[in-house]
Length: 119
Image (cartoon, rainbow, N blue to C red; front, top):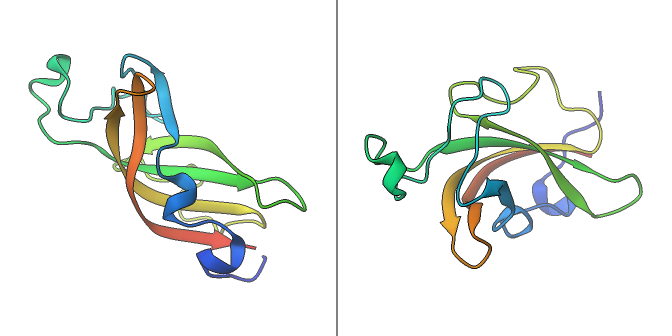
């Protein structure tokens, strides 16, 4: 198991993930684990779901690079894809709120927090 590092040491922080697009056009997104439809709580189709979903995101870093890529998005109930398994080298898990970004016409990550990372 790789040693734990801080987000700052690894080159990933809330600014790295904030604004990352999630799902398809027009605010269509689903949990990659259970396929439940995700919501920002603002879309007309989400009337019964008035709160923005908290999602758990999994990202990996390309070898010998500071570039991170989003690999998995799950609802808070499902959690990260590996459950409580320890993170391997170049992996990160964070929580974020789902929001709709009109500039890209899709959901994006907001309020990224609780970043766990392994170097």
